[in-house]
Image (cartoon, rainbow, N blue to C red; front, side, top):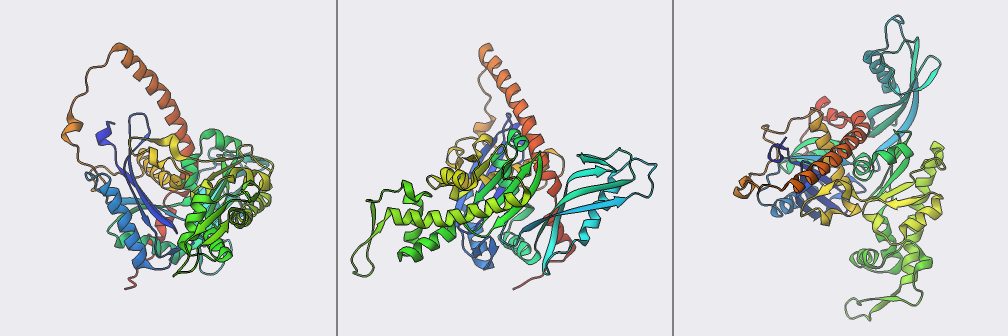
Amino acid sequence: MSKKDQPIIVGLDIGTTKVVAIAARKNEYGKLEILGVGRAESAGVSHGVVMNIEQCIRSIEQAIEKCIQSNPELVVKEVYVGIAGQHIKSLQTRGDRVRVTTEEEISQKDIDLLIADQRQTYIPAGDEIIDIVPQDFTVDSTANVIDPIGMSGVKIGANFHIVTGDRNAIRNIKRCVDKAQLITRDIVLQPLASAAAVMNDEDLEAGVAIVDIGGGTTDMAVFYDGILKHTAVIPYAGVNITNDIRNGLGVLRAQAEQMKVQFGMALADEANANAYITIPGLRGLPPKEISMKNLAHIIQARMQEILDYVLYHLKQLGLENRLYGGIILTGGGAQLKHIIQLTEYITGMGARIGYPNEHLTGELAEELMNPMYSTCVGLILRGFHDHENGKMSFIGKGGNFMPMTNDAMVEEAPKTPEEQAADEINKEQSTEKQKKRVVTLGRLFDGFKGKFMKIFEDVEDEEIF
């Protein structure tokens, strides 16, 4: 497929502190060519949950407008949206089923019935089961079966990862996107989107914990033996650090945020005890001097709490010593100085920063090589995964597009034999990498396909205005 026939997919990350819209198209090497980027301050969202619909709509509109301003030829109609929030929870269950027709091979129908049984799992009132992901199966006495279809057996069972969430919280996200005159192609769990952007197939095999430290929540996804073992949303993140600084040092919120971004570090021992930050006084009051050491102590205390939650979840799974890929930190909070050292100290595991740069190319790609954009890049990867697997058709359906300019129609100059040979080698290498990425993304996304959107098909949307 030529570049001009590739769909343009837009990811929309609606966070507590920022709303980001990124438009991309795949090039011939399978990389995401960034066509437009828009970022706006988020309003009306607290800890990943919409609290004010009108303010949230305006933030979405501003991000989309800035995305289009960065590339005036871009037209944005459809988006992939991320969902998190402290209402998203997960639990592990076990289910077994005795088959009636044991002479026949195990079919997809048997697996569907086994999954349907898990719908009876008890969950708190007001929550809804969003998705049920089978992790590994057993057939009679044979354990750890990845795909039982075609096998023979009397009893089939499986371990399940069940994701639940508040129906109204999810519906409010979609309502904001609708009222911003956009079509929601799908809603994607943010921990999975972040994982897709920063993980590769080696990470999936070795076992890793993805920890996305955002503005309002810290999203977590744990992979072991190539399987999604756990997802969690920790209700503490960057906003909590900012509030701690504000209350602990007696400064304004904007000053606290600026100090965190500019001077913040996660290890107090690394801070200079003799260094101070001067804050202008309010209404004629004298300037205030803030100790860098005190600032670092406040940040470290909250980061330790977040990492304690991460370690707690890993211990609950019994994986605190079995993830050879360690912890991959991403999201805006991963930019804190010395965050890797603190993570390794608290968890006893190796850690690194996860950047989405492996998938990006184009003029605008450089500014996106930042962990805060991981979720949005992952949303775009989900869109291309759906498109390439024939689950959604964008072309000719009134979706996003960008008119081809006269420059794009100009034929390139003939290449020398050496350049053609180099191109062939690059294509072979990129094709192999692309195949691996496709397999990895399939293992991440396929279990969750279309489950969030089903919520809106089951119940007619109600107007709240």
